Image 1 (tube, helix red, strand yellow):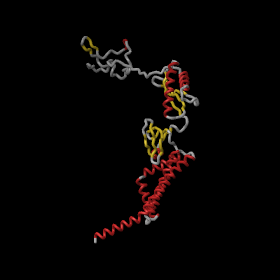
Image 2 (cartoon, one colour):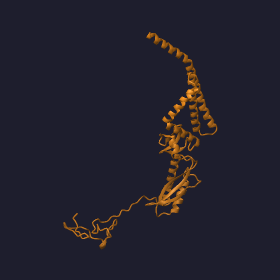
Image 3 (cartoon, one colour):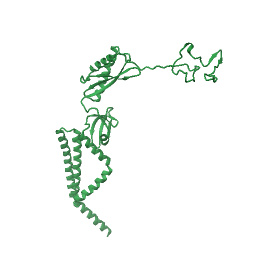
Image 4 (spheres, one colour):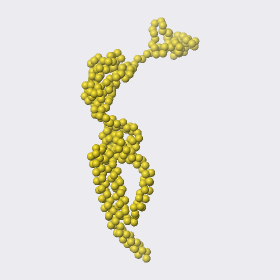
Length: 327
């Protein structure tokens, strides 16, 4: 009896599976069609964005979003075809509950996705721009739904969440066609500042890559310990990192010999050290002690605290009356 019952159940399961098989095949076929439709939708969105002059990143991300919604719809349709007993209301109710659960579980991912869409729409920077963000500096390679990838100048990849880029400060070095650079140069305190400015500006103006308009300018930035500090400002185009390094190298390579040829000194840092005799009789008397200054010489110098004569120590009294102590 038990064997017959088990066999009957197996036959029933097999018949049910055979009954569901056409629906499953139709559901898989429908989902495959939606997959093809999603790919076509993504390619169409990218082409439409390109035709309208929209940034390539915007078309790519919008195509991904449209493709995702198309696949979601295809899954619902395939489930309705494969399992006819499930109606649309049940699917949407399950989808609503699942959406709330997914929203709580993947809150950060959804925030990054929304930030990525806003970045693509507002376009504070684009793919190919050179930016400084999150402690990283490099070229924007891709703006994805979740994060933005940056290739640093030392050929490393930085993946920064879109929320951080949208809410934090981002410096775009290539936002405009021209970029101003500056280098600091020190000249001697005894040199003519006007002549030094003229020589520096002429040397910078002749460097390859420096724009003639606006012209280079040299302005006094401060008086250093051993030099007069001048800031040299000049403009370049394009404003990329490679141009920054190369043009700065050319400017400094021309300024240095130009200053030397004009007889203008580029001084080294100097330091003056003052010493004094630490065995003077006035040591310890703060009112009379000459901190940092050498002995004046002659009869005006206080006598040393200890005098050694033929191995015998002469110990004068301290100025405040206390007897000295042998060292």
